[in-house]
Structure formats: structure tokens, C-alpha cells
Amino acid sequence: MKTDAIPFKAIIFDLDGTLLDTLEDLGTAANRVLTRNGFPAHDIDAYRNMVGDGAVVLIRRALPEDRRDDAIICDCVQAFRTEYEREWKIKTRPYDGVAEMLDALAGYGIKMAVLSNKPDDFTKRCVSEFLPQWNFNPVLGQRDSVPLKPDPSGAIEISRLLNILPSQFVYLGDTAIDMKTAAAAGMFPVGALWGFRSAQELLTNGAQLLIKRPTEILRILDIVV
Image (tube, rainbow, N blue to C red; front, side, top):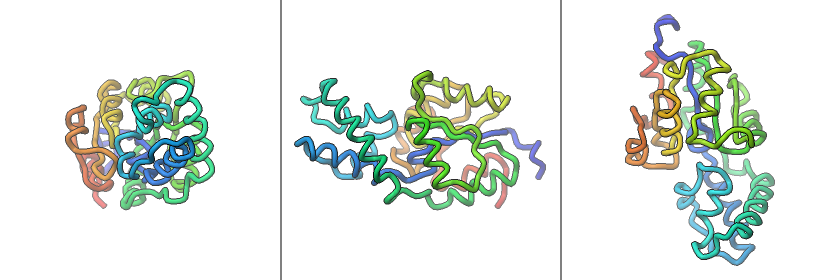
């Protein structure tokens, strides 16, 4: 099949919960900060509903409701970033099927980009460490000059950089934040069911398609592997 017959020309990936399983390392770092400050820790699985909106929101959700004042949040966020930077790749790995998906997309000339609410330098570091054999361009994380997802500014920036219309993008992510971002940017939202959130959350927030395995994304691009 010819590449020019594919209706979509590019794909934006979320990072955590979509390309990389980062949950245990994130949760472990957060729990260390909580216990060090005398707060109760959480089961790692509970962090599925806390991550995705950046470190500040993660820590706010993890703290007891009566201890979520600005000073405590600020101190714990700084401590979390230190903890996570020290041991961010102990358990983290690409999800099964991600390599096969990326190989097929690259082989058909589909442009690939990453958009994350992780800090920009750390997003680039994660992609370089765990996904070095594929060309993601651009790779964008949280920057002071651009609002976090679900604001569509980052996605629209990628569209402009690649000179590809938003309507020609697939957006693959695993949370409500990703589905809202895709919809606001005018892209095609696809929900990753292997990630951190439920099918109901993804559908309620605009997913046009749900997939159970990474390689299923190839179907809407008419790619056969």
C-alpha cells in the first residue's frame, strides 16, 4: 500500500502510560516523599488516577486532603523531583507491542511526535533512553511558556512544526487529559487501554477509538504487519 493513500500523516503520542510504563517508578518516588514527611503512602496502583497532569497535581492528589496547602505542596514537589530523578528508570520500560508499532509506523513514513506533561528536559531524556531507535520529532514536555495539557497549544505547535493539518493527526494517549487535548486541537483521539485509566474515562472525554494493544493503531492507518 502507498503511504499517500493513508488519511492520517502523523501521530502524537503521550509518554507515560502510552509508550512507557512509568507507574511504579513514579509511585515509589512519591511514596518516599510522603513517608519521609509523615504522610501515609499509597498502593502503587492508586497512582493510576493521580499521574498525568504534572508533578504539582500528582503531589496534591497524593497528600491528605487537610495537608494540601501551598507550602507543603511546593516542598513535596521539589523532593519528588529529586527522588524521581535519582531512580526514574528502575522499573520503567516500553509497553509490550510498542516497538512493533513504532517500526511499522516508521516504515510507512508516518511522522511521530511526543507530547507529555513531564518537564521538557526529562521527557526528552526518557525518549532518548528507552526509545532511541525511532525518530520522534518533535519531543515536547512541560515548558513554562506553554500551558500543560489538556490545553491544545503543544499539540497545535507540533502541527505547525511538521506543517501537517491537525485533522491529519492521530493522537494516542491513555487519560482524559489526552483525549481532551486531541479534541481541542482538532485531532483524532485514540485511547490506549493498556495505560493508566479506564475505557469509560477515555470514552467520556472524547475518545473516538479504543485499542487494547499498541499495534492495533495500525488498522486505522491501513498498515498491515
